[in-house]
Image (cartoon, rainbow, N blue to C red; front, top):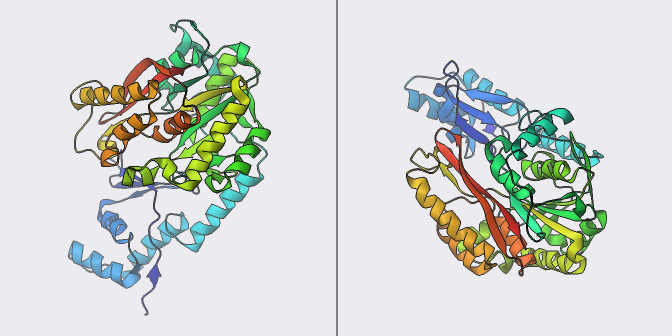
Length: 404
């Protein structure tokens, strides 16, 4: 029988140890939600995943498998394993390509952006949302001082970061009803050095947030190479959805938004160069800055950002505990970066982020830097800084901020 080429394992999958003692092994999950399947790969087959990262034939995989475990593995076992991965959309195959296109088409044709995290990260019903968010804001002082032009809030799970959410959103009041809220969110899975837009109203249990189509079209016209229109990442990304939910709650009425997913600046992290050294990124910064100058106080800026990601989940060789041990040093470094942000020092901020490809893993780097380039006159204040154990071995840091 002739050897058969095997498609490679897809990049960008969530791969982590199974949390179930009854089902040991490695979990495969698709963060893009092209497939809803979640597979647990038993320990004896885990090595096969590494083999599938490079071109293979079924006979190559059989031979390598046989060598590693010390006994002959029937080719039928190999075919069954590959067939299961393929049928569930985990290989770079025609099956996966069809799944992906169906999902993209479904989002393109949908009239609205459905809530992706209702019933998981927050309640699925209006009463439940209002009760939960009222609890978050119960001990937060009322807004005071001059009205800001923008805020930064976390995008971590609201239950984990509610104090920073409440601190930031306490600065937004219903008298801002005539503003368009420009929401800059991290695109965890989006194309690097690109910005994802959508015209679709964002739905939550509190209603629909309409998109300012005129401003959307302005950015598309002025920086077309940097923009991904109807970016599929909007369909599953939480960084903007959480901000819309909090905005609707504090405004107590429908809101108009301009949701922008900011892809990671990988080239900047790899080379140390400023993101705007790439023509398309510079064009988008210019377009965003021109829009800010033209619209003035008709805009209000909302940044959905987390900061450091430290611990076993994020590739460190130690277990991290919030505010103790190595995390005390992380807090100092976080605050040094935030100080540059508050001073409006984008070059200084860049100089602290880019060395070593950013060993703090600040996923909020791209939205923050985009805001600083678009609004160079903005100055900030940290209202609340926190660290939170997202699991027993890993910590995320974040803050609530205001800008003037």
